[in-house]
Length: 257
Length: 204
Image 1: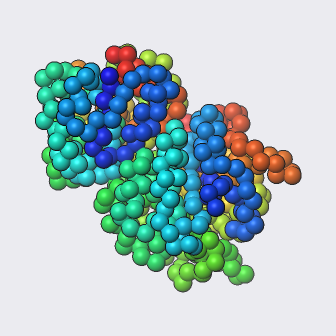
Image 2: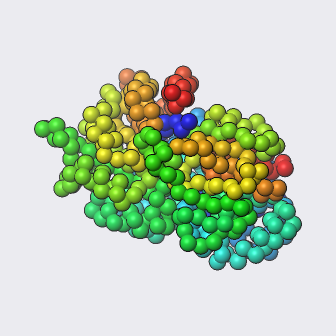
Image 3: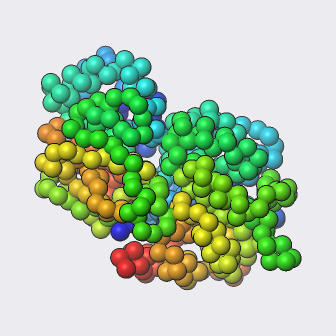
């Protein structure tokens, strides 16, 4: 049966890899190509690479970097950052990337997703939503690296994305980013109720158990993490790593139930 | 010499990298005359059906591919949309496929997928071999392959089915008719299981 996907998420900033905490304080953790090589050896399920500078700086995606990453990657790759047009998405797919992620452009111009899907296929269109919890326990969507609050209701908008037809929805919790104390399970539950497309969650995973608990609950879900796969130990020494074998076996068992 | 057909449809470098690692000769081909010294062909593909067919039709390679595959029986391996275009037609597009298989490409029926997520079929799934073939040597069927698609390949001739996968219902994830092979999954993004498949194809 289909297994849940466990997906390291890498952030690119100033051409290096960084890891943030609550979308702030980017810490340099290494070179993107080197990380991809290590993830190849560990046979990871999939990889997400997000260029967090492109939209903010208003620049084109860095095609040269994307090509290097795609050439090196022996696992499926999802790229996001600065994509605004079907032509850009097509160019990225042609470089050998499986999926193209959009965030701000998808939020402010959702019809664009239809045009992109017509060219690269709906299965390769990914929308990433950065979410922050309000004081009252509801959720707001943010764009531009958590700096711009979006005037849209999260659940209405994900239902709209479902109608438009996308390949995957990535829900990224700003509050839990880099905190490593578990996913926002209440948020995930509500989003899952509103969409049937593949859902991947990001923000908060701090242990193999956080991931296993999530997968046990949902059976088929994308479990993504940044800090967990780039840091080791309480002092957060940089060490590119992946789930231990026992956890991967457990995920296979869950898929058979 | 293995030719990776470069008709503008994705992922060709990933395949070339695998053959480089295996120390097996291969090259990108975008012009008919580059096929002179070629004894095996890989037809990659990412994207939508009509987009892939349009690019192949405009590449100037269509005729020689038909000749090599259908007349000269050159082994050919289609991946993902590169497999789907070997069918007669697809629910996803209006254009005719290559028609190398008596098969049609259909949209998964969401009503029979009794879980979320429904579509696309995305991620790692097991495969079950339906017939013995050396191309499946040293493959871990349980570990399986990475899939990313909403349309599936349906053979009309049962003899063409090489392996199946379950998603909602059983579908044909690997097909073979003589010298022609098609894989719905992405061996170029499926680690050791994918590398073994490309190696087996090269050794046919």
